[in-house]
Length: 82
Image 1 (cartoon, helix red, strand yellow):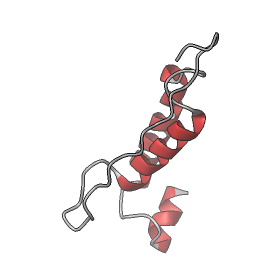
Image 2 (cartoon, one colour):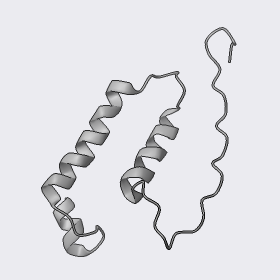
Image 3 (cartoon, rainbow, N blue to C red):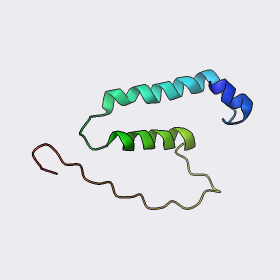
């Protein structure tokens, strides 16, 4: 799938096998650290993973200045405590 994306131009040139391993590793590791009911919602985890895998973490020189991140709503814990 990665090789097809590179060939059609929708993915940047890369080593398809290594890239597939990086993506699979990043996604499979979520199950080790994600805690349902914890600090992050499933939607927050999905959005951050997609942003990081699609855009990387290094800001490009030509990129617009960063916008202040939206404040995340506090999750309520069982028993009503925040």
